[in-house]
Image 1 (tube, rainbow, N blue to C red):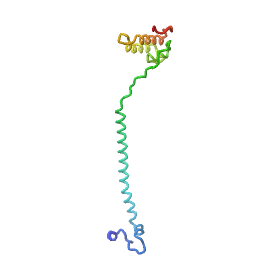
Image 2 (cartoon, rainbow, N blue to C red):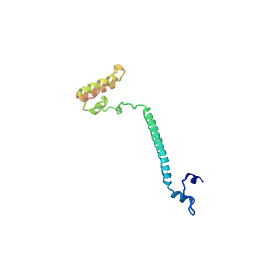
Image 3 (cartoon, one colour):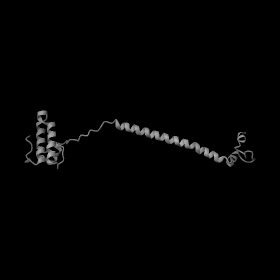
Length: 150
């Protein structure tokens, strides 16, 4: 018998005892529990490595998906409404793309940029050019309130 040859089961010949009871009473039963613990440790370590690898893979895929998205335009959304009968300071600020309480130098700089893009000599509309000029006048406080020539 294999147990006798190795000396693992000294009480295996005891009469009236089941082999299971004999296994539990042996002094080497603690050795078997240590063996199971020793086998569980590499398994749990491997499981942790696999989980880390999967999480890393998911993170890399998410990073690549984020990186390959087209960049969002950083332009401001333009005012989509029509012009009012008499221009208000709010509407003038929206046309020039500045705040309502902007200083005069900011108003002039914004007017210059918008006029370069919309000047009639460069293919822009006369109507829009007059509205841009009116917006500058309103922001600088030079308007009498009649509005544009159109």
